[in-house]
Image 1 (cartoon, rainbow, N blue to C red):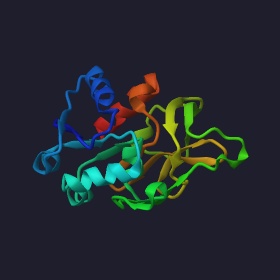
Image 2 (image 1 turned 45 degrees about the vertical axis):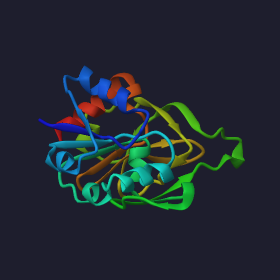
Image 3 (image 1 turned 180 degrees about the vertical axis):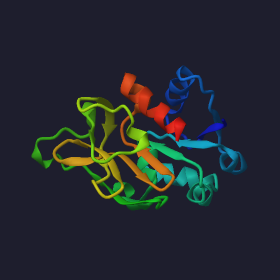
Image 4 (image 1 turned 90 degrees about the vertical axis):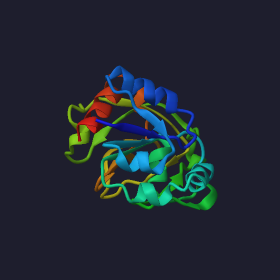
Length: 196
């Protein structure tokens, strides 16, 4: 099985790659459109801001490539946000495969932004990506922007209100948290993605 990580400049690429290696998978890192299209599974990692993230994908001429993928795709952290239609961060159009607008957390209610730390995942519907997820399972988050809960939401978390923690639309999936830093829960969800 060929797994590729899209080299979109995210600083979490190394840790995602290492997490996959712990699962026995050696994922290639590439910005080559043909290699991405030929992969069995594609992971779009990302840490940083939506504007530079989309600029990097445009610079690499990968926007249409990613939009046109038919195999399972997983966006991680910023990678999940880039799968959405738009982000308020830099007011940028994103990939548009998840019908949502990414919004900044409202820090007017005493919330610290960014949201950092462990938070409980609440499954909203059954999906193979969530197999084995328990009621008290938590994941590790670091983000200032979030995707609102919608019909694409598989699991939510709460920080001053509910937001989408795991999403899916067709073959596109996303995890707002860092599965590579979420211990057993993160490893299980990565395994579930590899099994799709």
